[in-house]
Image (cartoon, rainbow, N blue to C red; front, side, top):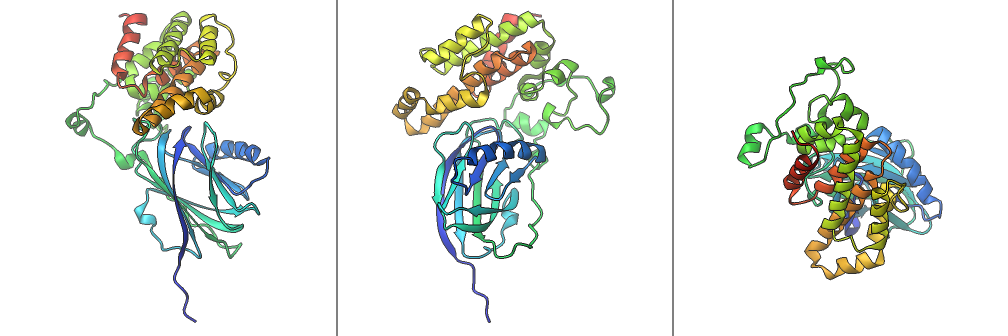
Length: 369
C-alpha cells in the first residue's frame, strides 16, 4: 500500500499584537481557560521557551514585542513536509481542541483573541519562528519576525516529540566595525571585569547586561535595568547609584514626559495615575500592574477611536507609544526608588525617535557632573 502525500486542509493568516515576549494558543473554550494560561506563563518563564497543558500552551519569543507579528496557521491531514532548517526556532507539542472547535491565539495586554476554526480532536503542533534580531527589546515595535503554526492529527500517544531548535543572539552578532559602518552609536563600556566583584564567577553569563557585569546597584534593581544598560550604560549606572530623592524625581519626570509624548495627558484615568505619582501615594487601578495598565490602553473605547482615525500604517505605532507610556507611569510607582527610576526611564525612551535627546535631558536635569 502506497502512503498518501500530506495535504494542506486549511491555511489562515493573521497579525498578532505580541508583548511581554509571549503568546498563547488554546483549544479550551471553557471559562477557566484563562486561569490555566496564567499558570502556564510561570512555567514557560522557568523553562525559557514553552509550557503546555492538555489544551493550551504559552510560547516565549526571543523578542520582547512585535505589534504586527505576522503568523500563519496551517492544518494538515498528516505530518507535513519537513522544513525545520528554514526556521530559527522550532518547538513541538500536543494540544487538544475541544468540542467548540476553535483555536484561540492571544498575547498580553489581551483584548479579543484571534479565533481559528479547527475540527475538535488531538493535534500535533509545530511552532516555528524566524527573523529575530535580539533577545529582549528588538529595537522597534515591529521588528519583522514571523511565525508559523502547523497542526495535524496526533495518531500515536507514544511518539516522542523532536528536539527543540532554539535561536540564540549569537546568531546575529554585530561587530564594532559593522556597527560603525551602519552608523550606530556605540556606548563606551565600563572598565569593570568579573574579577572586580566577588559575587560573580567566570562562568556567569552577562549577555543581558551587554556582556559586562552589572554594578551591585543595577543588579539589585533588576527588572528593566539590563535593557536600559544596552541603551546607555553610563546613565543607567548613574541613576542606580544616585540618591533615592533623585531617583524619585527621575521616575516622575520620565513618566510625565512619556504620557505627554503619547498624547495621553487628557485621558482622565491616566491623569489620575500621574497625580498619584506626584503626590507620592499608591497608584490607582489600572496602574497596579503592567498587564492591567497595558490592557486598559488597548481596550479603552476613546483611545481605540482615536487610533482608528490615524492612518493604518501609524495605528500600531500609536498603540506602541501609548503602551510604553503607561508602562513608564506604572513603573514610576514601584516601591524601590532605583527600580522606579530605571524602569520608568527605559519605557519612556525606548520607542521614541528622540531616545538620545531624552536620555541627555535626564543627565543634564538630574545628574550633572
